[in-house]
Length: 116
Image (cartoon, rainbow, N blue to C red; front, side):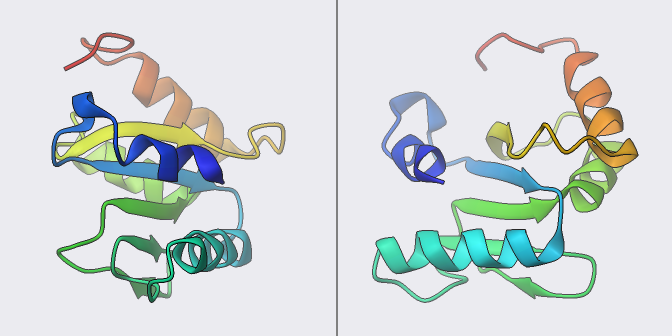
């Protein structure tokens, strides 16, 4: 949970978001709340979240916690994930179809593993 916050100051991130995928909706909301609390900010400002049925984010959001299903849909509609500097797959040991599909979509990109 500290890695996305540490990446906020990375020079290669520029003004792009860091997306962290969580396997469950409750985990996504709680991770976003904890990171926002560490920054003493409300959820939805620098740190936000997006699940199938709930969203708290804004134009200022730079760390977005999403569920695996939301990440998969993001990748299916925009394989280049424009505006995203890094994707973190948290709790990867909890394998689901959405997690495996997201990983396959991320690793089959032309620029996978290369900095932008």
